[in-house]
Length: 127
Image 1 (cartoon, rainbow, N blue to C red):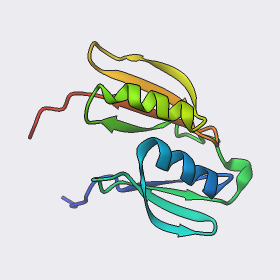
Image 2 (cartoon, rainbow, N blue to C red; image 1 turned 45 degrees about the horizontal axis):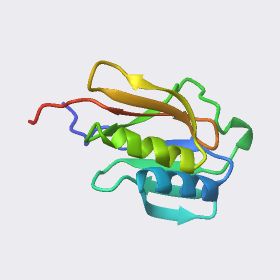
Image 3 (cartoon, rainbow, N blue to C red; image 1 turned 30 degrees about the horizontal axis):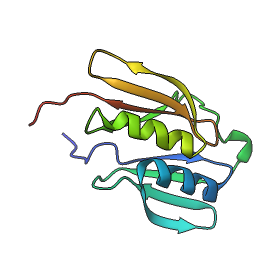
Image 4 (cartoon, rainbow, N blue to C red; image 1 turned 90 degrees about the horizontal axis):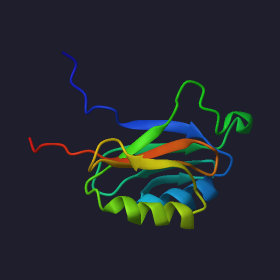
């Protein structure tokens, strides 16, 4: 067996690092790990996940190319309404919302580059 820490990061192309920085820090209160002229690495508070955003090949920014969406799992289902407001305040475009099953709310939205992002709550029993 090869030991890993699981999926650690995803890197996506964007048109504007600065616009992307404002968008994701507003909605998810992400923290900056690295901030260079054409690249930022953000992490969500209290977690070890990393989102890398790179300004290059702008004609490909927002094109899924086999990735349909990426998602954030909520710790508390009631936070879905808070995120709904933050998404709208940040200029996100909500494309779908509801419940997968009762008590499991979700929102799908488009970010400034057109990527589809999912936010959902799913009960996970304690380990």
